[in-house]
Image (cartoon, rainbow, N blue to C red; front, side, top):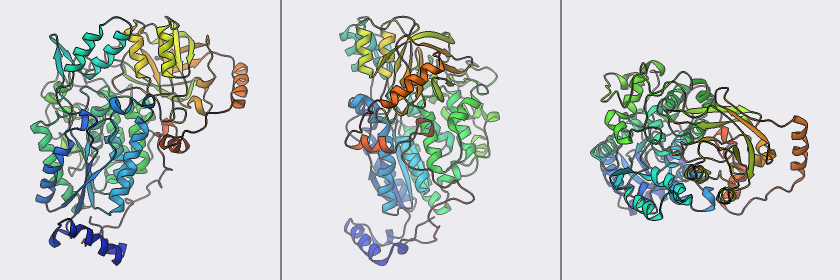
Length: 575
């Protein structure tokens, strides 16, 4: 599929040609497929510090295949860096900045296809959302995880530093020891090691069919990563010629396959809203939270990768990565789903073997049958919420406690330091959702602080905020919907209210009489609501949809009724 540039008018054709000729682009290159290399790069964080080095080899591969590459830069948020401001409220909205960045640059220039260099948590979902929206040939290239290190003879990675910070705050670890761990946790570029959100979404892209088979997870700057880069550069030119568009790949079957892989690997809970947002942009009528709920009891746990278990992300890659997981799950997948490699998922999995069946176990011998991603509903979360559990889940399946309410994460941390939070409490953090944040603030620091204080098993947390994909401790109910800021029941909870979290029945309930809740709701409606901030977060607050709908900023596109949407394929391209 090549776009006809004559369709934009002779004046625009002439000025664009003048711009490109001034860049040194040869006349004979003007008619080649024009490929965007979407580079979400920044020197702010190690997770994408190597992406600039990827661009050159990618350009070479595209040129060798007969294409004309253009590097396009976008916003480059890093969860651990960008979350320093506004309690992490910029993190989720940054995903949608990436989507719109790509739309402006790629659709504005009428480029024919794109390869997207995926790194930290929000880049892969933002890039796939843009691919679905623009519906031009696209390949997502996972650019790898960071090598972890050792300190005082023990393995250490970013998750352990995150967890240890709570122990320092509680006086159970010295600052010097934490500093030593921090100095040794990351030994090179790439995303966080383990099954956090970044590696989860890289694997989800492969399961969706929008990343090339056998490319996730991968160690950053390894021979395997560079091989994936070269393969993507060659294949994207073929995809443009063949006219294979993302909406032909991002089908209901593809989303069911991706959810199955997420459940089998105990992936990040953030994959739920990201996959729903991708489906939204693709005009694909699927209920991703519903799929997680429906498939939870059918999909066994085949992997036990940190922070969910003892194995490392390196072990998972060595065992065969996403391909190995899908091979073991073959009987539970829709093998007719298409992939950007050409053909079907069944074609891709033919002949795939699992290098280590102790790391990626067969369905007949799983690590566990109980789901680690649990969708819950109830009077406190009528629109749903999510709970993450470890693979080897020995914790209580029912938690009964009394509410202790805080308006912000910092207030809750101060309450913990003051001894206000005690065993049997359910900490309620409302006002952290997409609207209330605005931008969905992070509650992860409180979870790790509770663990550090020795309360991880005796105190629960319920919030409409989000959690890092590395959170996997204690009883944490996150992303409660509807959120408190729009009148959800979470905003009506008062100190001392009884709350029951029942993972067997998949419920989270506020045990307060209906008439009392009606009285509180009437009083809540009379209160003056927080006015929007200035800047990007105020725009986000006004436009964002509920988290269960993906927390997206655009109305749903027309549900597909036949062939793919988008520009009409042309056989030739002119400048």
